[in-house]
Amino acid sequence: MTQEPELVPPLADNYSSMVLLIDDQIMVCEAVRRALANEPDISLHFCTDPLRAMTVADEVKPTVILQDLVMPGVDGLHLVREYRKHASTRAVPVIVLSSKEDPATKGEAFAAGANDYLVKLPDRIELIARIRYHTRAYLDHVQRDAAYRALRESQRQLISANLELERLTRIDGLTGLGNRRYFDEYLAAEWKRAFRAQSPLSLLMIDADNFKRYNDTYGHMAGDEVLKQIARVIQSGSGRSTDLAARYGGEEFVVVLVDTLLEQSSAIAERLVQGVRELNIPHGPDRVTISVGVATAVPTADETPNDFVNAADLALFRAKSEGRNRVAL
Ligand code: GH3
Ligand code: MG
Ligand code: MG
Ligand code: MG
Image (cartoon, rainbow, N blue to C red):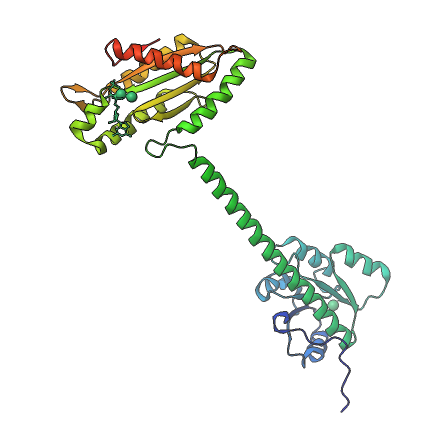
């Protein structure tokens, strides 16, 4: 018995071919089976019912589809187009296997999405070579695709981790409000914006009253809980999403109100004072309260955000010296 020459050597293990043959003629299936019988790296699954082609392709997960054109009830080209539409078969190489030899039919097959075209019955060596070639191309593609997806996924994770990290650098750990650093940045930016637009900017400087005594009486932990509750009042009471509420430090908070006049800002400040009072947190014979200093300015060229903070601080000092639990302008 003479050994046929092997033009293309079998592929390595990871390149095993799974061939799905769709052909209504059992004779063709039998011939292809015989042609591939001695190739350990090539498995064959055939289906003589073209109506089941998509279902079988889904199950078999072929690395190559051998597709007949003329079949009862279904046009082979229609099937090729269907493979291209479904996720599971979109990239699977399709070799059209037909007895038609005219260029027009071949052109139509390629236009429908076929990757190759063989005239029945093809030479055994050519058939095997093309199956291996397309399997390799397909599996390489699948691998690259998976690697690409993994890369995209890890990039996505990195980006969201960075966003989270950036968010954390702006947040006060105890209260969840903005932190001092974020406040400084935010105020500087809004100050510039208000200067350009010549619009009013307001600042509330908020300080918990007699808080040292609160800690001394109830403990630092209880004090922290109170600060959280005060922060919640400030957060929900300061209104629009463009306003920033932040912890300035210790038991002091700030609210930046953009495009807000003195009258509106002092009304907001009054609401915050009332809101904290209405928490009804016992503080000795009294309740926990806050004092608020309000400053409003249309920025000028020779003023700085620092001057603005000092103005609000001065107002806060007045609120304290006038008896606490109040707003001062
Ligand atoms: P005033 O009404 O004049 O503001 O009196 P005060 O006692 O609040 O003022 P002072 O600045 O003398 O003290 C602030 C106190 O706030 C000191 C400290 O015990 C307390 N404090 C500052 N930061 C924190 C904090 O993060 N947690 C707690 N529990 N207490 C804090
Ligand atoms: Mg046929
Ligand atoms: Mg203080
Ligand atoms: Mg205080």
